[in-house]
Length: 183
Image (cartoon, rainbow, N blue to C red; front, side, top):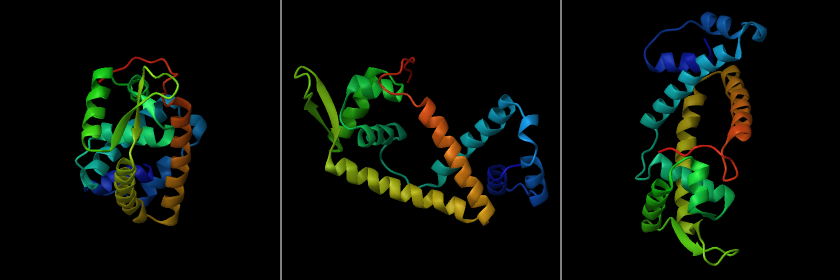
């Protein structure tokens, strides 16, 4: 059982020994298939996200709206169609989310500098400040999850972070990616 398993079981009231945690995580990697790793990791990530969102500071913005703000912060202004592709959502869904963000003063629509017929969406200063506030609060909440563990647990969390970052960097969708949009 991994540190994350232990955390989830600890939060759900299931007692787990340190020996069991160490024993199962020490199984030689060559004895574990990629499918087994995925089968163990996927539900843990799902549960961890669920626990995190239940315990984190709430905001009036949806996860999708926060994600759109993050995309705009990271990539700069974009057309709505590119945001929809990047977020793997349909154009009407992206347009509705952007409309709400615009109403709240978090984004602004501007003429495309390269094609005056087109419109791009950009983060406003207020949107950037709100995103920074939300991220700071959520980082603090997540840090509290990690802080309760020993240095070994923190080290494992850092290693897992590196692996997850590589996975996301290799597979994160962008406007140039061709994958079906969904709601």
